[in-house]
Each structure stands twice: as structure tokens, then as C-alpha cells.
Image (cartoon, rainbow, N blue to C red; front, side):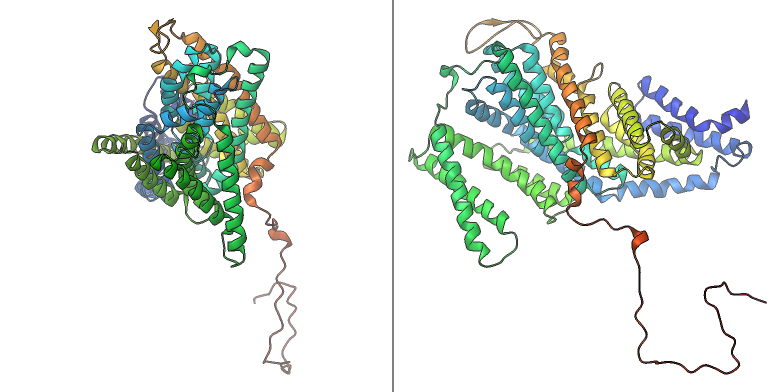
Amino acid sequence: MIEFIAHNLAPIMFASLVLFLILGYPVAFALAANGLFFFFIGVELAPLSGGEITLSWPLLQASPGRLLGVMNNETLLAIPFFTFMGIILEKSNMAEDLLDTVGQLFGPVRGGLAYAAILVGAVLAATTGVVAASVMAMGLISLPIMLRYGYDRSLATGVITASGTLAQIIPPSLVLIVLADQLGRSVGDMYAGAIIPGLLLTALYCGYVLLVTIFKPAAAPALPVEARTLGSGTTSLLAMIALGIGIGFGAHVLMAQTGGAGTDIWAATIAVAAIYGIALVNRGLKLNLLSLLAQQVVITLIPPLALIFLVLGTIFLGIATPTEGGAMGAAGALIMALAKRRLSFGLLKQALESTTRLSCFVIFILIGARVFSLTFYGVNGHVWVEELMSGLPGGVWGFLIAVNILVFILGCFIDFFEIAFIVIPLLAPVADKLGIDLIWFGVILGINMQTSFLTPPFGFALFYMRSVAPTGSWVDKVTGKVMAGVKTGEIYRGAVIFIFLQLIMVGAAMLYPEMVTHYKGDAPTIDPNDVEITLPPSEGLGDLPAIEGAPEIDLSQPPEFN
């Protein structure tokens, strides 16, 4: 019996961890406790394992160095920066401004409020990167308006919860930072690989709303005329866009003559700054050159879009690392909040407390994971996982399908951070051995883990929506009508179709890896086996004369020593 346990300590250890998590123990402590407990058992059983267990007491002394390596990880510095940026923007009511403006812009269109929620969710994802903030902000602001004007309740709640989860896959997502760290890849490459799937998923959501408006128009009506407080005015908005394109083209032509670098970026920056300045002057001097809608759209949308470029643009152009981009984003968020006169000491204190709490949460889980992995690798757990996964039928495709099913099921019960810190380190070596691009692998799993926010029983986005959606009857302040409360079943039903859409996106990313692997650019791949190194003939020595009596040496044969 003892020998059986010694030979199967890895699966027993993994099963014990799962049991601890099911019982509700905190993840960080469950990982560390399992690691230390099975380390002691592994040391005692090592003589009976036939060399399968390589644990010894001196190996435990390596733990402080491993923990210090976690604290010295500069990649993880991006997490507090992006978290701080998101909380500042969320508390400064940026979501409210965006939803009001974009909702008015798409108001005349059937399903306009749903489109607005999806697009604002994408913008919030690219600025805040926090699912809870996005879902709760849009739930508080958009849900009452959508219910007021007759939107289907399941559609309204489903659109809001699914749009909030876009923060998981659209950079600067926190889960992408963790995945890049666990896979040993660049965060910038992970961001570049995830941008197209994130935008396609956004388009997929919009496509679903379009189908609803075609086949069931009563479920997503247009905004009534009396509710369009900013009027129409799309002509002047189109004129501003045309003016911006003209200014950008002219600036590009002028700067191209100088031959400077980054001409396209500078031209676009000049164009955007010009139309933003025109809108500000028009509002300040009351020139009435623009419609109220065009003026509001330009003034509201350009600052967050500029912040997105400041963060992601500098990372993709190679100007800044993800950590530096996060620092610039945090500074930009403070400037935006200050410009709107919404920055206060209380807001700053709340943002710092929330950032510290989340950062400590991540670091503690990572420390627990390091303790667990030290023991798990010492009992040949990585070999067990590799044999288990590489032995699946279907090769690479069998592995990818099995892993995605596993992650989807785990996402129903545990958080994405826990999946990233526990499961991904075990799967990454197998994926690398099978020749799978780890950035592609990480993006696929990132899309998959997005479903963990929508899948019952522990879909956190569903909980966020339940916390802000009215449970009982309420009186609408605008119409004076008594509105029925939102049932939990309606929230869950609304999420189902978006779970399927996310799984469709997982399949699309698997079938078309080019949408992720474009991050490699056009650089040709080089096989080290095809590289030949030819040394030029030495100059200056000439042909050396042969030494009489010296034996000839055949360099193709190994030397013999007497």
C-alpha cells in the first residue's frame, strides 16, 4: 500500500488540492498547505519510490529563492498599474458618460441601446480591464433605460454581462498578463495576439443583436424621439470625421517629405487633436458650428480612445513595455479624472486600497502556486500530466479539445486566476512539447476562461448583475410606471446564448490560428538545423610547411590516447 502511494503521489496530490478547493478553502493557502504537506510525505516515501520522487530536506531551502523570484517579477507590476487605472476611470463616471453619449448616437436604430452597451463594454475593457466595474456600471446605468423602453429582459441582462466580460480578452486584460507570465512569453505579444479575437468577439455580439432586431424587433426597440436628448445631428458628426481624415492626410503628406519615423502615428495624433480642439472651442465659445450630438460624441469619446492609444499603442509600437504602458495609463487616468473635476482624496484612497487588495490577492496565489509546484515537480507530477495529456488520441487537436473542455468545466467552479496559476503551468510544457505556439495557446484559453464569468453556478458576472438589477417592483422616475423586478432566471437565460458565442470564438481561434499568430509579423522562421556556419580561410599565416617526421592526423576520427 505504501509503495502504491509512493508511485502515485502526484495524482493523489492533485486530487487533494481539488478537494480543498471544493470545500471552499482560500486558494493561496490550499496551494501552500498541499505543497508543504506532500513535501513532508514525499521526503519520507522517496526511498520507496524507485527514484520517482526526488524530494529531500535541503530542497526546501530553495523555497525562499523561488518566492523572491516572484517579488522580482517586473511583468507582474503591470497588474497594479492597470487595476489602478481602471478603478480611477470607473469611479470618475467615465462609463456613465460613454453610455449616455453612445446610447444617444445609436438611439434611432433598433437595438441601439444594446449596441451601445457592447461598444462601451469594449471601450471599458480597453481602458479599465476590470469585469466587475464594467458589469456593475452598465447594469446601474443601462439596464433601467433598456427596461423602460421595452427591451427583452434576458437580452438586456445578457448583453450587459457579456459585454462586461470583454475585459478578459481585450488588452490590457489582467488575465492576459498572468497567462503570459505563466507561459513564459512576452505580455506585448500576448496583447497583440488577443486584439483581433477580442474585436471579432465584439462583432459577434453585435451580429447577434442584429439578428434579434430582424427576427424579433419588439425585443430591442429603437429609442423614442422624446428620449433623444442630444437630437440627431449626424451630418455634422460625419463632417467632423471627414475633416479629421483631411487633416490627417495633409499632415502625413507634409511629414512624409521630411522622412521622419512614425509619420502615420503623428498624422493621426494631429488630426484627432485638431477635431477635439474644435469641439472644445465650439462648446466654450458657443459658436454652434456643430450639433449637440457631434460635439458630445467628440468630447466624450476622444479622451478614452487617446488613453487606449497611450497604453496599447506604445506597447504595440515597441515604445514602452507593458509595465511602462500601465504606468502611463495610470497617470493618464488621473489626468482625465482631474480634467473632469472628479479627482478627490477619497477617490484616490479608495482606488489605492482596491489596487493593493487585488495585487496582494494575486501575489499570495502565486506564492502558494510556487510552493505547490516545487513539491509537484519533485514527485514527477509534470511527467504524470505530460503522459496523461500527450497520450490523448488526435495529437495536437485532441490535446486542445481536451484542455478546453477541462478549462470550461473548471471555470464553472473556480476563478480564472486560480485556473491560470494552477492548471496553466501544468499544461504549458505539454503544449510546448507538441509544438503549439504558446501565445496562440494562451489566447485560446483566455477566451475560454472568459466563459467562467457567465457559467453557473459561480458565474461572477451573473452575481454582479444580480447585485445591481432590481429584485422587486420599482417605479420608473421618467415614465412613472411600476416596473416588475428582474428575476434571477432571466439573468441566467440571457447569459446562455453569449456562452455559446464565446465558445464559437474559441473554435474560430483554434481553426484560424493566423488571427493570433500575426504578432510574429513577416519575419521568416529559421530552423536551427538548417543553419550552416562557414569560416573564412585564415589570412596572414599562409601555408605552413609540413614538419618532417610528424604523423598525419585524420580529424574525422576521434583521438586515441595511450
